[in-house]
Amino acid sequence: MYRLVDIGGVEPRDLEDVDPSLLPIGLELQPDRMRPSIWHYERGAKNTFHRQAEQEELYVVLEGTLDVTVEREDERDVVRMTNHDVLVVPPESWRQLKAVEESRVLAVGAPNVADDAIVEDDTTTE
Image (cartoon, rainbow, N blue to C red; front, side, top):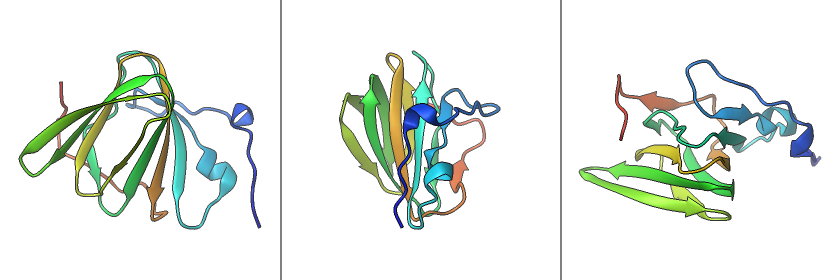
């Protein structure tokens, strides 16, 4: 059975200690194999520098501009993403999204597991 959701009708959630707000479309859609969310970033907001235990993540910029820092081994790249850009990051790569301007990002993690983010204590990028 398929499910259809109008994102305009999904109530946003503000999460404690997290700058971007969450539009929990995954709770509405209940997919089996992926974990979709839409994140709303105010200008200058950033998420925590993290990696995933299992999830490969796909990011689609729905609107706005973000700088995405991706670190793997000893290399760190900053990727500028704008409207309709798509990026896939493997679980083992550390990453952080920072809004250059107000932005909305569709993030899809797979497999669909409970939040498996791994955060280094007090680790952020500038």
